[in-house]
Image (cartoon, rainbow, N blue to C red; front, side):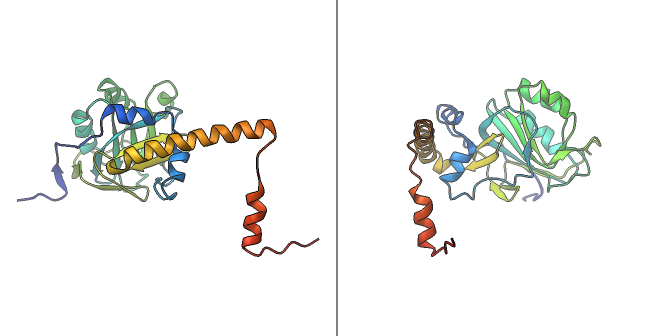
Length: 225
């Protein structure tokens, strides 16, 4: 019998590390521009330090203000994973702090993305560990459950499935489905190259801006002298 709301799935289909690692220098914004601009989580879930984040999502659904299943997820995670937590956006109690940051680092986990709040944020100024959250709250969590691990969750308006590729920088977080990862790598690299060329054109004074007036004409914009 299935115990919905209190269950753990042990297995995740992860992307190969050699594929994931090629995303580490591609900005989130460039990937988003090639995904219809609808694949980024709500920017209310923001970076709490400058550490770039990329890896396979290990998903956690917790009861608001409770981190029992979050703790279990850290014990289960593999090196290179990113733990993504659906805390229903609650800001009443933090879901983790410095002890959990340091323990996760010791297990090779790359970071946390939390639809909720955290504490001990000053420690993140010194730790090479990425954390994204809605904010900071000194009150700690409960540890009673229920919850689920490695089931689909919703975080900041985006569905995240276990094994999805998640990437974060100072702009925010983008989520890439496993089936789309290779295509998005190629498009992301091409976008990076296009931007480099644009920067060179700006520096050389040869940037073509004709598209601005062409677009205004297309929408019949009235120009008044």
